[in-house]
Image 1 (cartoon, one colour):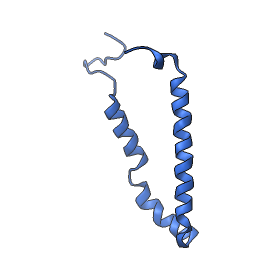
Image 2 (tube, helix red, strand yellow):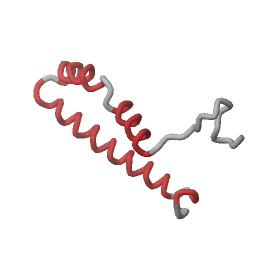
Image 3 (cartoon, one colour):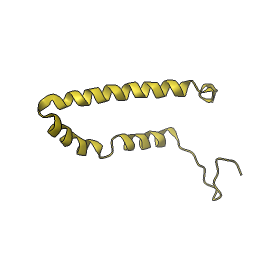
Amino acid sequence: MSKNTTPSGLKRELSLVQATAINMIDMVGIGPFIVLPLVIKMIGGPHFIFAWIVGAVISLVDGMVWAELGSSLSESRREL
């Protein structure tokens, strides 16, 4: 039995599409629908959009950091 197989014979792995779907569900979920009214109420007025822009920039930078970290792993450079 290989290390990626459970006793029932199922493989423990995710494809790129499955991993992307899980990530999108985690990021989007129901959060924006609950958080948006709270942010508008706290900040007041149209300034809440700046909070979302700052959050988007921070998220983009975080994604770049994780991409750089992933590309530095030796297994990510091997030929398929």
